[in-house]
Image (cartoon, rainbow, N blue to C red; front, side, top):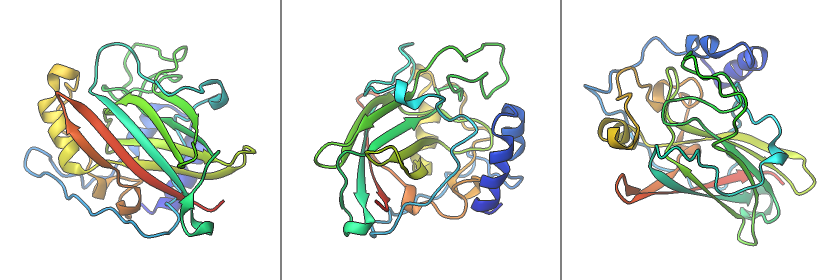
Length: 241
């Protein structure tokens, strides 16, 4: 499915519930038990990061969650420092200070706070707000969030949502952060002690993902570290400001 078509579809179905989201997955998924996916080189060119869908689980009141530590506090997941640098394409990719950066992602089981859960389980997450936060970029154009390596759910590869605004609150870009296939397979194959108990059966690689399938190199993060020591994630997100 083409990205633009998918975005239009989700804009209509954003609050229809997790069954709709799962139904959007591609039929040609590969089996991570016999394939490790394909890692890609990060595109470092000075071009705007692709626009992606904000839904179906965007933060309902992002201005209420100005914080750097967005962890759930349940002891599950591998800690990850997510460092995001915002660059202004209109200024030859100079850093953009004073930008508002919102992020949100699912927990290790694939569920989002503020919603009913992507896996159709009985727990209700509508009154909690973990893995959601907002920061303002510093003089180096950077924000840092303390979080965990995200889990996954059917039909999507591992990802983080990002919404960037200028200092006045004007929306500059809605996009998503991707992770290398080999890293995601490794975490979900070897991370059961940290709460990653779903394994990789049915996992969707980036090339088969409905959002990333038409190109992921401009949204790919760089991650260092390990399960035992934690991860450090870095990415440059480029906007027109």
